[in-house]
Length: 214
Ligand SMILES: CC(=O)SCCNC(=O)CCNC(=O)[C@H](O)C(C)(C)COP(=O)(O)OP(=O)(O)OC[C@H]1O[C@@H](n2cnc3c(N)ncnc32)[C@H](O)[C@@H]1OP(=O)(O)O
Image 1 (cartoon, rainbow, N blue to C red):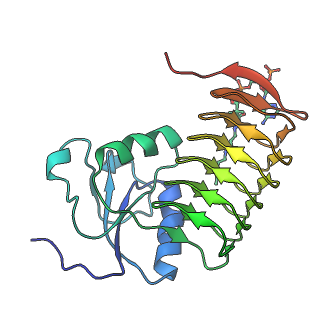
Image 2: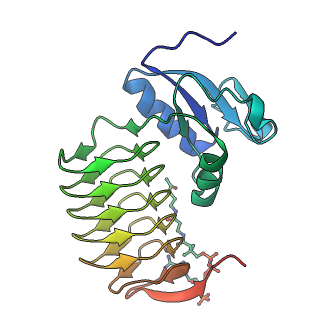
Image 3: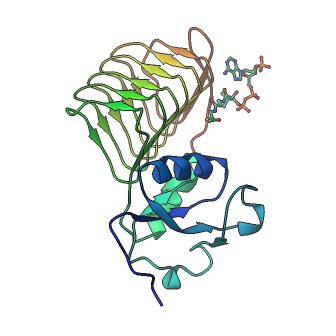
């Protein structure tokens, strides 16, 4: 029988290390984690509790109704794939120490970790990760399924396309547009617009490969 639903219940899809951080944020915000799903429960993080098989095996019988879900999977393409087959409502997980401008917007399923800052007129898409201590300044546009890693600094008017991963400690100067499904390496300094599917590393950032799927 379906458990009774209250406003503060949530379900987690993904039981790795990233999921641990999300659970801590949600519990501090007063949520009760009623179920944790993973497609490979046997390889779940050692600290995960009561993990059951995810929807990939039997999507029809997955409990799509009821408490909202957070897709707690760190790989951007996997998060996008899961969002494609789950027909759920989604929750957000926002750490109490994050500073988020009232003049910004944050999409469903997005997680924002400790110490992150989101400045005015910035839009954050769906199922995005704004990781620990990341700084996303004014007038940014962050696409769905992007990941802004710990200690990244995005200056004003920066755009990050769908599914792109900005690596830990990277810096992006004002008005730069990063395309979709790019990877910006750890510590990279991005000075120019970056086309879709590029991998960029170094200071100044240079494209080292293209990862467009065949
Ligand atoms: C809480 C969390 O943990 S959030 C997780 C955040 N994760 C990250 O920030 C990881 C970011 N990932 C990286 O920086 C990776 O190095 C990547 C994705 C850019 C490249 O990885 P790969 O595609 O495996 O490339 P590979 O390791 O083969 O390196 C290719 C070349 O680029 C260089 N390179 C790789 N990464 C970087 C970097 N960040 N800065 C400068 N040079 C780099 C390598 O030295 C190598 O150079 P060479 O050909 O002269 O030997």
